[in-house]
Amino acid sequence: MVDSILFVFWRKSMKRSTSKILAIIPVVIALLLAHSTLIAQDAKPFVGTWNGALSVMGQELEIIIELSLDEGKNIQGNIDVPIQGAVDIPLGEFNIEGKKISFKIVHAQIQGDPTFKGKLDESGKKIAGEYSQSGGVGTFSVEKQ
Image 1 (cartoon, rainbow, N blue to C red):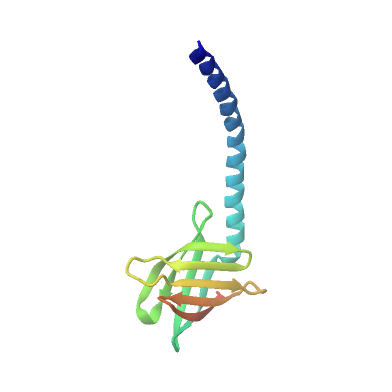
Image 2 (spheres, rainbow, N blue to C red):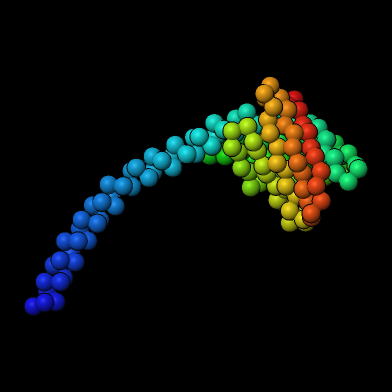
């Protein structure tokens, strides 16, 4: 008898919980869609081809960064370092907060967690900031083409 009363109580409790969960699902989906739209809007000023230089350990290397949005409106990109013969090296782990952007070179053969952290200037035509790899730190500056 006690078992059947507990079962009925548990079943009613589950029905209430299920209806609450089902009511929340559309809200969660809407928030996720809004978040992805905000990410895409934040990324738009960074989309394009950026040419400039990376300065590290007394050396200056020409770099070309290409940033775009994929079909899901997520930022993606690659980098070229012509003097090293490096072309279309993938970039990833993007983080955009207002005018600040950070990203990493994500290539299995490139070690040391190469990371770029920069800020878009007021004109929207220049990103400058810090570059780090294997504990070494340098700077980079690129201009939109």
